[in-house]
Length: 123
Image 1 (cartoon, rainbow, N blue to C red):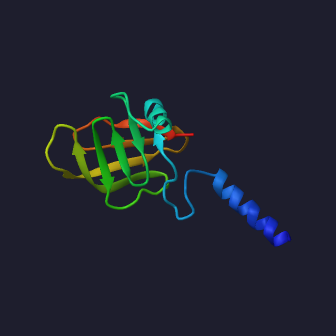
Image 2: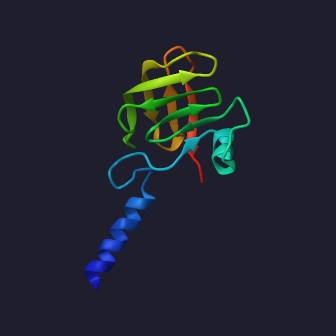
């Protein structure tokens, strides 16, 4: 019984300690206020929409799918990505930099665009 209680405590501490899934991948959707509202509503209705997940980043008119999944480690991660933009034919291969600044949230940099963020966990 004590062993079960210890295991439950460990799981609860891991869950409360940060945005990581059990495998270290970023858990959930992270966005600005407009992005999180869009996640809740199930659609985008503003040019300000930004949402980040372990699989990619999406804005109102563009998106990038990462070639590997984003983890929750602090600091910057450079991720290969296939990106597309509204009004442009085809896709491009880009290196997207995602920076986890802890309590300050996530910041995303896509070549040719301004840094996006802070992005906070959508509840």
